[in-house]
Image (cartoon, rainbow, N blue to C red):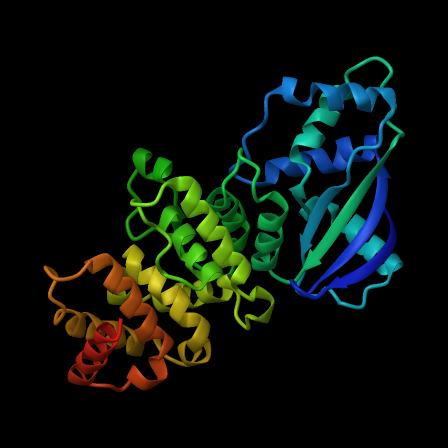
Length: 342
């Protein structure tokens, strides 16, 4: 089991942080399998890259701590060490390895060598957060600068957990799955990932082919770090829950399956979630119908249509309380003023 020595509060991500210890045997049996929980794994370094660490492990070194994380809505910020220890060991199979993937794989390789001692200690940092979004922030700060995985890849990894909504009927398919059979009415996972990126950065424009990937990655990381995720009142999962509730209307499903609209909706919903929760699917279908009617006033030859659609849908959904009963003419005027001011 994992023995916990102390707990503290991380005020940046509003999460419990614990310091603990186990042994190599436990790490191999219970922690190494957690690497398979993500659908997309960080690229492994060449084994030769970690040959020195492998040899050191066999010789009896103490590895740098790995970081284990959990998501729990019921977690208390005042967990004692004993409470945290009970929670962690009872929920170990629900954990995520935020930092230490390479070390755990190297540990597995070392365990096959003569002289390996399975009872040697392994130190563990543990984070217990209320939302996946907060783990994503911490994951980026832990891994930023490590070439094998970009910030966008990290977002894709945690999106798998963030969209695991058992109570929402929202079919989501990967590009690979659509190659095998077309799923009518399904959402593309790539669009969900882009919407999540927009949520994390509070920005609808996170793609730019004119900027090289490495620089774009730095910009993306900076945006995530500048966003106060711990102050957000609504999680990405809650926003997707509203998507699942509203898409029972065909017109709404068609509108939200358009990636640019979904990105704008996600950013706007952070400001208007209470209004969205109180609007019926039928009424919302009329809302998006009026959006498209007003959007038709935009001259497509004069603007980047995708960019403007993302920006205006975020503006429209973010101010939904003002637009829910507005006429098409009033919405057109608002769009005119919005586009003129930028």
